[in-house]
Length: 260
Image (cartoon, rainbow, N blue to C red):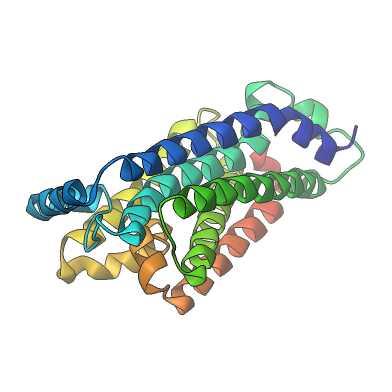
């Protein structure tokens, strides 16, 4: 069995569980909006306005009107981005990490293939998983939003881009962490990397003086509020380029002896 098929076979069950779990969470979150009437929505919006800025920053509610379908959807998108980003980073780390954990590194890397070719095959499987994962998550989210009311097509397009790019960025980060880390227990490292990006997103929402931090993290660049307002195209392109650079470094590092 080639490496690509092996990786898909190994990950398909967990991918199905991820898809089902995320869609259920998103659907339940949107269902809450449909269960309340307009007066309750107004009360919810007023309650959010009275919340401390730090709380609104943590929950991604800064500057959003949750009494509107688009505003409420943006909040759910922020929660979805957290889950999707975690999916990406742990999927990326699994390519090398599970080989180390299951002690199959020596076996797979004595095959008549270059180490970087093996990683590339694994990453092709990873990208296949990401595309499949994002297709169903985006579809489930679109259906959930449409049950509440109408949103613009550009909102939907930005949301899809937000989900996919976040997944890809954190996936490439996870791959890089797993390749360059000499510590076999690097799951905590990947989680810490994600947490740093999450903290940067929170800090950027708390004050205009440090708003520039938004340009350092995809969790803010691609946040629900920017799905509404529009992305900073240049920064999004830079983030995509960084993802490619991470992949490039990872592939080239695989030919260095110390990664084994």
